[in-house]
Amino acid sequence: MKRRLPLGPRARRIALILMDVDGVLTDGGISFIEGTSECKTYDVKDGVGLWIARRAGLRTGVISGRGGAAVVRRAEELRLDEIHLKVRDKLRAYQRILKRQKVSDEQVCYLGDDLTDLPVLGRAGMPVAVADAHPEVIRRAPFVTRARGGRGAVREVVDAILKAQGRWPEVLGWFVSWPRGGGKRPRRGADAGAQR
Image 1 (spheres, rainbow, N blue to C red):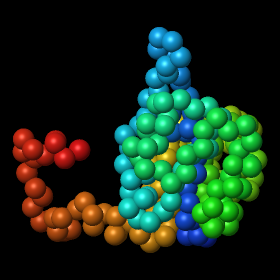
Image 2: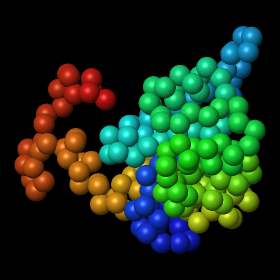
Image 3: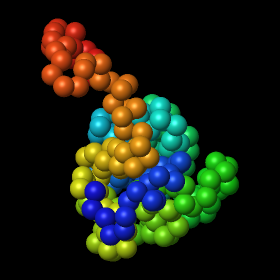
């Protein structure tokens, strides 16, 4: 992650990760299917990152100006703590979330990509722009992901927060069962791919 400020002091305080949907959890593309149905593509790495965040005790949520069944379905699959769709005033929604979750600005990481995210980015303790965000957002955000929106940017942020909080060895311990220094790794068998 590119940074204009030291990441550690801000990331260590984070208890809640909030984000926009279109352009952050997705690449911003919207495909219309017959009628009013929409199709959106989500990155599996971002989904795994949000699952890891939840398992590590971080709360997560979305604030989006748009809505739709595809967004609701994905948010429910990810078991997000806060789901706010069709929001006209993101800052007002953000303030309600802080009150409900009993957290302060310093405990929030917010990922955004466009001008509508600037009010919240200006308040959050760890404001992050995705790599392909609007130039004004990138200019103002002290942290910018290397990954583009919908292409692993959320996962990059989750990993950075957990590393700064000293939780990364614990996270790796959930998945890595072979010894570190030369022990034999499990063979890739027919059932290895089924675990993904």
